[in-house]
Length: 102
Image 1 (cartoon, rainbow, N blue to C red):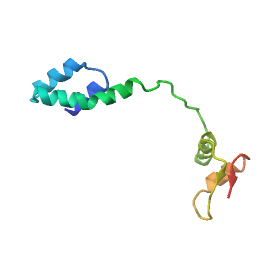
Image 2: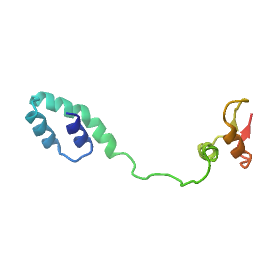
Image 3: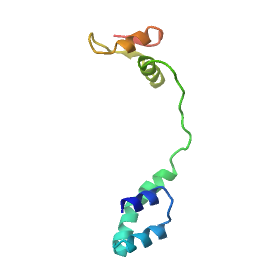
Image 4: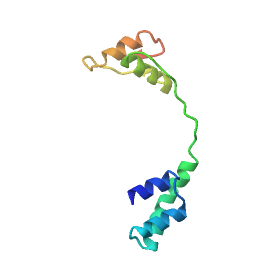
């Protein structure tokens, strides 16, 4: 059933095929329709999902990557205590005046 649900959600099989394959594997028609109706909101949500991916390539250290992610999120202030293990972020934030430590 997991494989059938995956195929149905991935839209590699139709509704009719889902019902037919479910009944062939031993489910009643009522059980197959119930399973399909439970998956239907996921299929509709997948159809309305935006296809544009908003990514920005980046090369640097882990601290620099974290600093860039914080900047992309709009973070202005970073609260860090001594011995927090965030030394790499501290080093990266020195070059970014829009990030302020508190």
